[in-house]
Image (tube, rainbow, N blue to C red):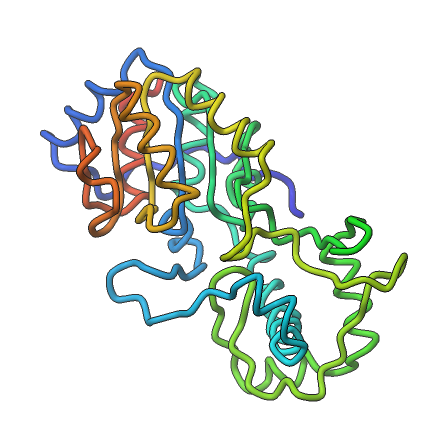
Length: 290
């Protein structure tokens, strides 16, 4: 992973309307802010999401499909062998850098992300709870050994010489979750854990899996220590994110939702902002800059 990008913020190009920015500032000024981010914050970095308005229909992979179907697993690893490189090459955008600046200034005291792209860490954010794991690690389902995705890439390349070059020569469409659209996968050779021969799986929580209890506990504790919850770029369709909005509302903490389109928590929100994450967060960071 590259060194964190800590370049200064540029001046915001498209700010929120003045009344919305004023209300946002009223809610966060002088308060500890916990932030929950989803895929919408990373689209400006070239990583597509599943549910934003205008996004093509995509079907997320389930844990049951991955462990139960060797053909599906083969297709997944072939696609991931190409797609993870695009995610690894992605750079933080203005929204990521704005949140890192808000952390440095003491406004943001907790950041929980549903994304696996590591862009908050690459932007220089010091404390991130990666709720759904990260693309850069791989775990053995049998012995729990961890290896880096780069190390696995070397093994897969040795088992499939020329596969990546041939796939890229036909043009690649990047999909969410370190995936890519690759049609010809039937001859792709998978590899198993070098320690025990068990199944390898990206260290990512798939649909149908449970988020590890220690991460959920850490996220709840971080939220409880804050005074406001800001949701940025998440439709809160799945319970792993929605529960934080519910908890904040139940404990009388203001809930601010910044997202393109409706979310499952709009009825819980103190303020909703239908805007892009990058300009809105940048405007907030500039307004609160010391």
